[in-house]
Image (tube, rainbow, N blue to C red; front, side):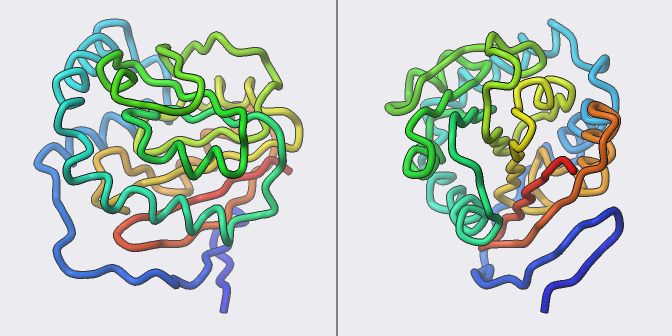
Length: 219
């Protein structure tokens, strides 16, 4: 049975169970704290922070897919199957990295912009319209996105709201669930979007494999 939580959050039962052997990241506490602070106050982000993150992921690009590609798609696949209805139109994937999630998105949205800070990560990607940019300030037209997908990346809610058309949705993904480096609780996501838009938002969420997904809609 579905369960209704605080602030209009519906939690669906898990249908893709988690096996043993979940990877754990040593940097999780630090990066979760940073991601939560950015979601609550985008002014925490600055050019120095962006440059450091880009440099780190440029170095990780060569080895990124060796382990992560085996499990990162499961939460997205489940969200696409059970988090609808999902609108047609243009998709913007923020934190697209090497493009592990992009093929699934292209099946639903043939026009998908893949945005990442790291040039090294984008060079490894092979599909979608690749765009190197900072998610806090995107060179995309206001109201142009039917869907904005954020896979283990930071949230700049004001910019996401600017991009979305009126009936657009947000898909938030953490491939390692509450242990993911960029995990932010659903109630914090909802509060950030409500501050950014002065509107109420609802969420549908669930887990798949080790990950968690949330589909958020403006009311």
